[in-house]
Image (cartoon, rainbow, N blue to C red; front, side):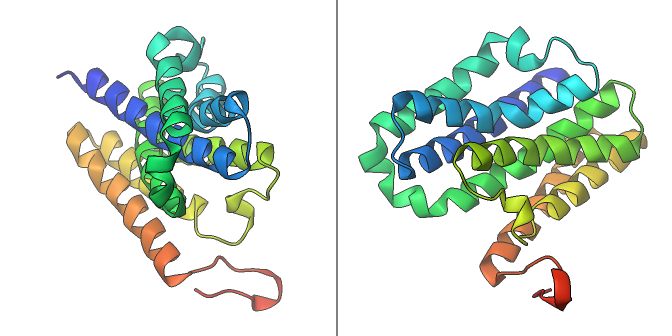
Length: 207
């Protein structure tokens, strides 16, 4: 499998995971089928769409490749019609979100590097890819985006994307990008488990 095929596969997997988290949020908000599909699509595609526009990868992959539209629709329909069977994982939305975040910080950074960006802006694009869809999801769902609530969310994404960008800059094999994704995933999951918080005004932080 070529590096580009691997990148697309990871991108689609990240879209599916993020889209599921968006659909489950919509169901918890008691939205109708259209609302579920909108939140699934916005969550799965939002970050990548923003990234592609910023790095001038136009038209964005979400509009140029039918698979990028089919995946979030499939995830949304799956959650909508199989929700009774999936009810037990609703409380694991944050875990699904963490997996999507780690996948997207990797693919976002790699794609930005492929379009000529240096390691620093590529790391930022990896972070944007990871957090963009979740921010759009939360705004549409009428809640404060998780990145503004003191949770360690954007920081793990930036750290993971930075590792990927540095490895790519030094010509390391693509599979080593998993190190960045793993760093992001473990950091985010541990932060959720231990309730680590980012610094807040007045020194209100847990880490």
